[in-house]
Image (cartoon, rainbow, N blue to C red; front, top):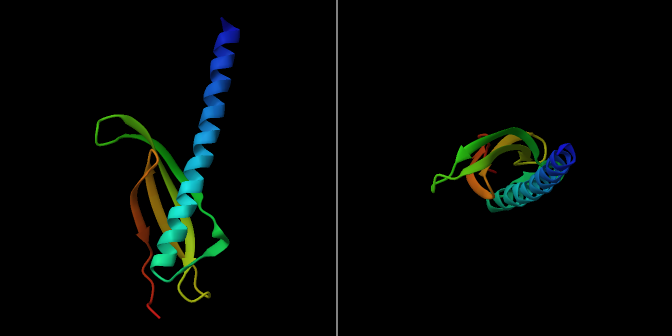
Length: 102
């Protein structure tokens, strides 16, 4: 019985890591597209996880809610912070720190 629990825990851990990597790749793509759309530069070409929780989607199903932060610049000199929240694999919100238009 303990071997079965260990196997289940390992499988759950592997699933979580794969799901987290997939969510991070999606978050990088969304941040990159948002920066391109607004004429901004995504700095370091990456996002980092800031928060992880569980929330219900529109159908009432429990999903992982992940918050990612990233940095962008409007001129290459100033660093500004952006934040995106994903519920499952869907974008829930995207926020950009105020910046000056060139």
